[in-house]
Length: 142
Image (cartoon, rainbow, N blue to C red; front, top):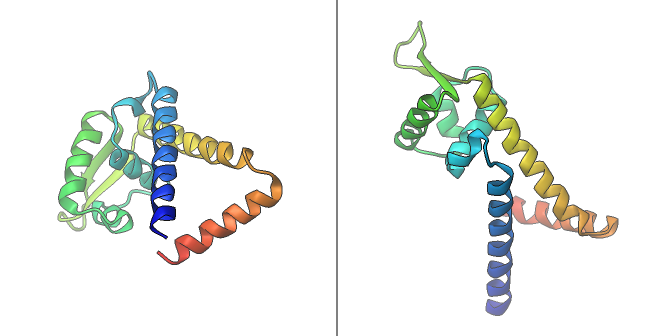
């Protein structure tokens, strides 16, 4: 079992490195180039929400508020996100993507979709079904 786990670790690492390399080359001259993986997770999470609070994003992504504060400071500075206080409860800070932030989130989602499609394209139809079923089983048990 240990040998199989080591092989799986090597293959996962290779897959992740390939994705990272492809993403970096695809993002040249776009707002994605200088963003971390957590920055991109936040942008993607925001793209499907309507003016959520930082607390909402913290809970969804399981990231501490202190980490998100730093991420949002950077995203606001890069003009990818706006942040404002709720009028009814000044303790609540709401965030929203700017148009550039929305474009960055769409670029990330396009890359993710293209990467997934490239994996599936290397498999025949039966292998694709089997692969997806196995991934569902694995993720359901995590």
